Image (cartoon, rainbow, N blue to C red):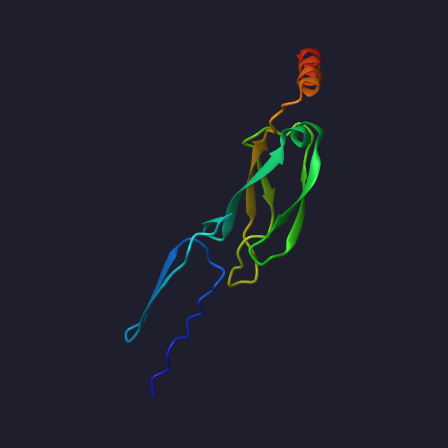
Length: 130
């Protein structure tokens, strides 16, 4: 009687191909890319769109994890587009019980301004700030 090794396939892996090979068995699993998250080992990378006014003033936003949990994140006042925010131990699970991290790249969501009075107000504000 020969004892076989058991392999665990984690369904939460995103955007990769995994091949498990044993002498008598070959299992190949292709995993579709996720709409929000890109996988880098046990870490997840995503883009978070934030209104430009919230970037200037600071805000709190909710981010949904792969498992569907809601995480509250704080976007500090004055955050620039391209800034990467890190959320520790909320990425993919490890076999040892730990977790990877989530890295969010902030992208500015700039609203279109069509009302003339808003354009004038924003122009005054811009001139005062500069």
